[in-house]
Picture 1: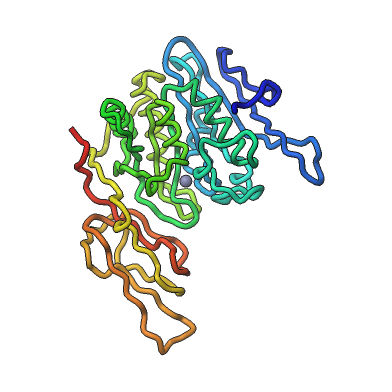
Picture 2: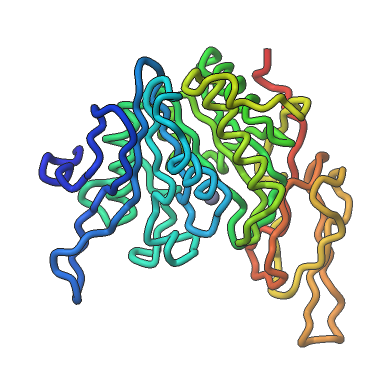
Length: 340
Ligand SMILES: [Zn+2]
């Protein structure tokens, strides 16, 4: 079920109109102190001449900042005359989560990136996802989904490939992701979850580029620079901006992936995790990865954890405090399959 005409009437951007528009998708939200109020999801479009429609998303998680910063700058600074085609910006798509600086929405506690394709009869987060999936994706040729590690992870700045079965589409995605020019390129299937924005965009046939830009709930000096130039490079690659907006590539494209459950070092106990390696260090299967300390029980020896696969440390948990099931570390391994 798509959004009906009355619901679409709450969108202040006319997708057929040329030039720059900065507005909102105003999603009705009827609560105790505001019976006929709305959630104001920021939305902008820059349209000019012939070319692809590119949808640029930030703020899917509200505590990941490099993407929304880069998209806000483009919205404000880009001269519409330089665009070929249509850029649709959703820089703070989970607006309630962005305002709260939380991964999940304070309204329904949902993680937007586990709600796609969304539902028009669901909760606020599900309705916003349905707007992206049902209204925006059918207009799009390409989708950039700009994530960072968020409050709980620090991740090596990387551009991310959403795995797809079609080899032609897979090659298009690799080319677009390579154009982003991050220090690493990683194939990530989010543990096979089909409910992510990039998985949904891939099913809709769009060229898909994801990112992971540092994290820790802060703005990384390096990652925000990588993100700024990466977004522009991808728009040049797609033909939506002139080549003068691109920057020469700085990185040799090296592909990695997160090859299954063995890549994750999971806490088996309740305590404080001490890592043994920094992000980017080479590690091997069976090697000690860190240990969990029991600070209030000093007579108890720490529990040692080990890596499950060979690779490099790609992501590390930020809070030291862990509970059973928490993800302490993630290892990325060189990606060889399905590459031709
Ligand atoms: Zn995210």
